[in-house]
Amino acid sequence: MRILLFFDLPVETTVEKRAYRHFRKYLVQEGFIMLQQSVYSKLVLNGTTANLLKNRIKKACPTKGLVQVLTITEKQYANIDLMVGFQQDKVLDDDSRLTII
Image 1 (cartoon, rainbow, N blue to C red):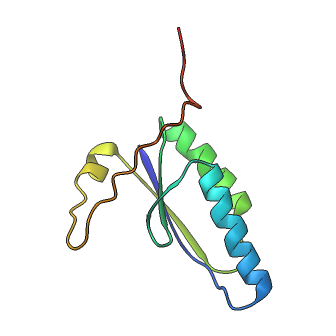
Image 2 (cartoon, helix red, strand yellow):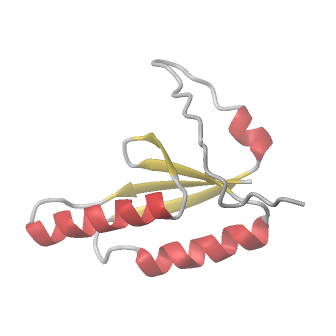
């Protein structure tokens, strides 16, 4: 499963800019990868993990702006059609979920 997160936050005042930076930094620390400007994606194991992540995101959301979360399957994610531009191939070398037996 994938979590797609879309957000549109105001950045007119210094307080709003700080809230934006804090939220974006939180998303990166949670393991989200930027797909586009203000569109982030994270791979989750199952629906339970997705719901737990949504609850954590809800607690970290700024008070102003728009934050939306969409949960889709890997098959649906694989069917995304690229119309213009290029797909960013970013290799993650993170072993935080690595289990050595």
